Every structure is written in C-alpha cells, then in structure tokens.
Image (cartoon, rainbow, N blue to C red; front, side):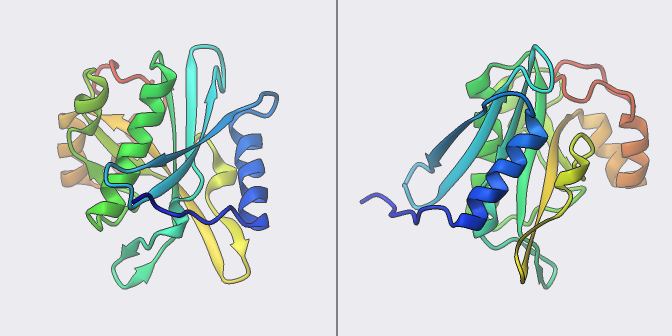
Length: 195
C-alpha cells in the first residue's frame, strides 16, 4: 500500500520557486518525489546540476518541513541543502534524501551541530565520512522562510566532515569548527581535514 501524498500548497510552490532562485538563478532545476523503503514517508527534492558552477551539484529538500523536528521542547521545521563537487547528481540527491529519511524515521532532531555518522562514507565513499548540519552559509537567504503566518522554515546545510573534525566539534563547539571550515573546500568529499 503506497502513501497518499497531498499536493503542495500554493505557499509550498512559492517556496520551491524561491529555493530554485537561490540555488540556480539562471537554470532549471529538477524536482522529484521520493518515498522511503516501506512507502510511509514522502519527500520532494530539488536538484540543480552545474550549480552554483560547472562540476557542482546543489540539492535542497522541499517538503521535510511537513515532519516534526523536535529540538528540545521546540518543533523547528527544517529543510536541508547541500552543495557537492564532483559527485554524480543521483548520489548527491540520494545523500540528502537518505539523511532526511534517517532523521524523520528515527525521530533524530536536526539542528546546527548535528552529525550523522558514517552516512557519507556509506553512500559516496570519499575521505570525509560524516555529515554535519550547520547554518546555510552558501545560501544566506535560506536561513528562514515564512511559509505560513505561524510557520517558519529553516534550512540546514549538510557538509561532509572528517572524524577529526567531528571530534573537534565535540571538544570545541560548532563556532570553532565553522571558523576552521571557512575557506576550506567543504563541498568536496575527498578534501583533506582542517584539523
């Protein structure tokens, strides 16, 4: 029995257009719907190849906000975005989809500083095995989007990180790690570690 997914609201369609303008202002991204293995969860995802420049793939979820994301006692509705270099389109999209389904299916709250261990290694290989969620540094306009009068959507940028960087995050905090990542090619899963 497959999941019956409601069509996007007018507000969600407007949000998707806004996201597309942020990721690829002059191009035409693709939007696809994904179902998890048992077809109980649905996710719309926007993918833009050669964005922001040739060789890069930018991906954003569009309907993750429909699922609760309890951070402490607060339900913070989120979407995910990533930019990866040299990664095939379907793999870049698959990484974000798998991350979103893992978070929703396991009721794993996502907030700045959350790390999904090993997911990059499992799906893409590369030297940076984990996925860190942080503020959307590449897409400042995606920090908060007023979807409805009582509902803001916040984006988290997914960044591949090394084990040494994950340990540094635990010891020194997100701000210290983000300072080290400034200027690093954090969109490259084969980059050297910054610590």
